[in-house]
Length: 452
Ligand code: PHE
Image (cartoon, rainbow, N blue to C red; front, side, top):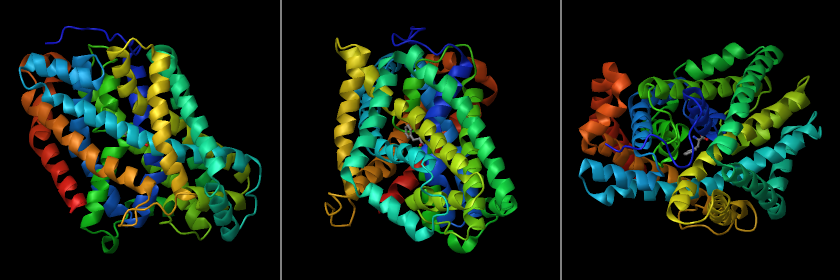
């Protein structure tokens, strides 16, 4: 057993604050921007069902494992894995989970800050009233003009990254917790208001609901299943140590399974509710549901531009996206920041600046992918941004997930396991079965099929 009861980085003040922080990590661009468009492309209902199945059967057991490993290790994921390998008397090579996670974190954060920067820029764009009464051609043109300007894109990316660093620098209690304590309730309130607004002004709520839940088998194929599984992974922030790092600051004495289930339910609700904001707006305005990145940045401004109160609610929408992004980006930074603090004599502020600075530098490649660097592509046509997204989400996260499940399910010492799962005797056997067999096997399939 690892006997630390507190982390040197600080602790969440309550179980609820851990839930806010972890749900803050989970809820992000993945829910509001990526989920609706994937559902749109993959035939709605069947995709949503597959996604829900993956969350419950693969995501949840790995989410539980990450929280458990973090809370048992009480350090950055890299050092937690070293400590847990030692007490479990297995090879220290298991720390590779932490190293790969940090790498994935850098890669995701680098492009995440770029897209989040767009969302922040769109708060001002919507507020300015520029989109009032705009037509599809104009909206697309203004998006193209915006992302085509390297100066603007880099400026917003830099702003978002500085915000992330500033929060991380203030530490777990005064930085991370204070942020999620206010932004999470605000996010939830904004989202509910937007669902109501969308339903009332369009009168298409039921159509949106039907789109999300009515199966369209024609548009669902084997690659949709893989996409659903990958999305379950990304949206729960799994496979890179973000949740492990947060778990290290979770007080003992409460159920991990119950907490993880709450987080998964919150995350899933936000994804579904985002769909219920977006699709009624899209359908009422005769727009395309499968427009990818454009769904949020082109289609929605058109829709808001046509509606009463659209300027206010459109602004609110992009505020919501920005809030969701910032509570995720701080969790992308945390594993590496905690490690630098443990390993060096740098304080948190310097560690956050160093780590954030590297992610920012790497992110320049993604920021420029839409303008100056549009031609820097791999033979398969991937630009820098596509490459970062593909390698981190489709390779590193699933691989990290398999390793986490195998370690927690098969290698972790029984004493540590029993100690952490004391409050979860009732669900222990089920968790262990899913973690030992279903989760690694499921992820292995995702992994192999995405690569080949
Ligand atoms: N879960 C976040 C989202 O849905 C993204 C994320 C992935 C955050 C991995 C942290 C770690 O936007």
